[in-house]
Image 1 (cartoon, rainbow, N blue to C red):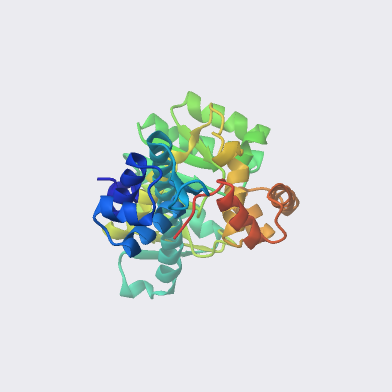
Image 2 (tube, rainbow, N blue to C red):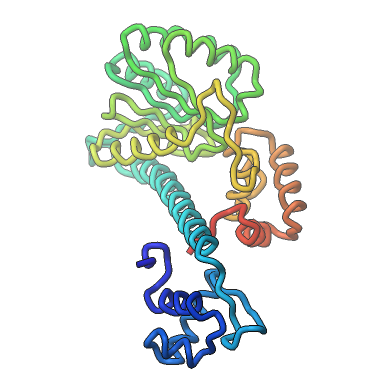
Length: 331
């Protein structure tokens, strides 16, 4: 009955028998559950791993079953943690797939694949993006990592943005949480809202990306230098996968008018993102780039988290974060 929550039938039978006869020893539990003593011991091991029984010198079995209400809370919490871990793995896989798509597309000869268009240099990228924006009829969806843009760049973007919005084109943009402290960006977002644009933020973004009308996607060929080159992708399957990545991030993002929700154990969202990246072994420079902050700020955030977790290494920080419930356990 409880297999959906990670409790197999034999362990459940042992647990039920312990509730019915708390003083029962191994032999009595085996008799009452219809299992062999060896299977009862195996069930007790699994129950202990799930924290549904606790060692006790007073019971003949050596264990005491926790109450059913507590047991269900523990099983549900574990299930939620596993689902959260799976979601993290899915989003990480989507982000990795997006970058792989861009990198592999850039390696293919242009004539070999009509669904891929390669752009070289900032001027070519800027002109192509402007042309795609002019042709857009339904939506432009953007990931804008890399921290705050200059006030000059933000002002320069208003004319083409206004033209899009006046045509009824939906504009959705995801910035980094770090831009919330940048006055020119705040003013620009306020301008976008007044003209019908939608803006949300997240602690970290996987890749710079612009999607047009669910038909085209533009990604950089080099995440370290988005101005060096880009690819325009038209393949239906590829664009659908990138839109799935965008929608997943958009659903988790916070509207600009709201405050980023706390992460696990009440951590601010930015610190929770740093913790996940520490657990994956990212350097301070990589963390800074993903958050859109300075390397100094990234080092400070990482050092504070490691101190709070009493960890001497990034790997140890990840282990302690899982043990303390700050990060979901992964398999």
